[in-house]
Image (cartoon, rainbow, N blue to C red; front, side, top):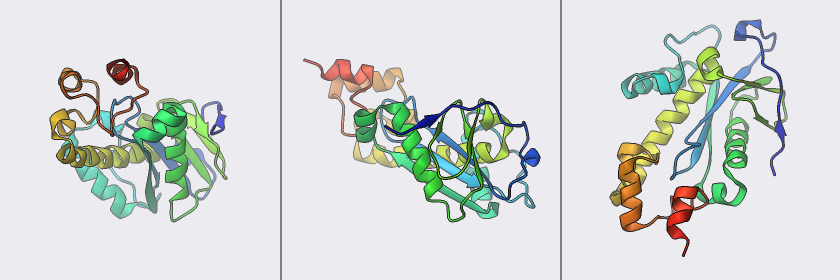
Length: 206
């Protein structure tokens, strides 16, 4: 099992942090029925602020796409990590989420001095890591990570829709919509589905 650390909230602004490189880390796809859980890590350049950063869920897809380009071009470092549906089934969604975060942070070309994570749990990392509830709305680096992760995962699900066209992954991105439920009832799950999740498990149980 991946160690989990629970810590109190951090200051409300990254400018209060007296460390050189602060990475924001966030995940997307934790609650979906299909596809991987994806995490991103971003170290912003304090001398090159990016206007309009916010929780990716509050932004339109067009706005996310624009910000995704700006973040990649102007940040000091960014990276992605993921855990597959099979890994989710093997170790559970919480542990898979933490694993994806570990992979994202490990892939950064610049090692951060501190990692800020959205939520109330953090994975074990070789540097200090702080959980911030609602951090995707208050910490620019976490907001940037949420945008990078969301854009990447949406594109990935659109690609998976070409391999598995009957499920409509390009429309619901793996979330539990009525269309998705009906497709599962008609066709059964595919390899991209999380068989340990209760809606899928109930379909495949004899």
